[in-house]
Amino acid sequence: ALGLNSYEEYSLANRVVQKMLTLQNADGGFGEADSLTSTPDATGLALQAINYRQTYGSDSEDKKRVAAEKNAVKYLLLTDVKNNHWDAFGGPSVNSTAYAVMGLKAAGRKASALTTYTAWLKAQLSPKGGFMTSWSNGIGDVFATAQGYVPLLGLSYLNLIPVKK
Image (cartoon, rainbow, N blue to C red):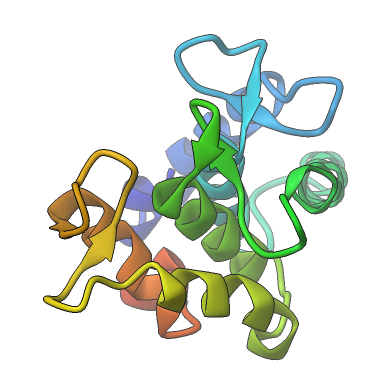
């Protein structure tokens, strides 16, 4: 949906988003490989797709989008750990926290409301650069760094895509 919108394929992007909304779980989140198990990663990405444009189609479709956004935000806020990060695979995750923070930013949360999360992300920086993960043995991980850098700046992927009106 993000790519389609950035190429002004608004009608097709709307169809993708509307289909995506049917995949939202009862807890408000979205899933990945197991679509029935919500994750902060998938939910954060979904929030960004939902919010690329404020209107997508009919009034009914826009109401569905707004309701899905509200439920996804609620899911993220209920599943954070210690009000400063999200876990994945049983432990703290830079990647999950990054996607969740970007999703909340895309949903309209102010950067000031996300400071506990960005402070946690900053604490995961390696002295030699990059974000450390549970598998990177104290050094920066390229994948986590690519994901974590944008929310560290108080941005989401939406800030990186030009919006054409």
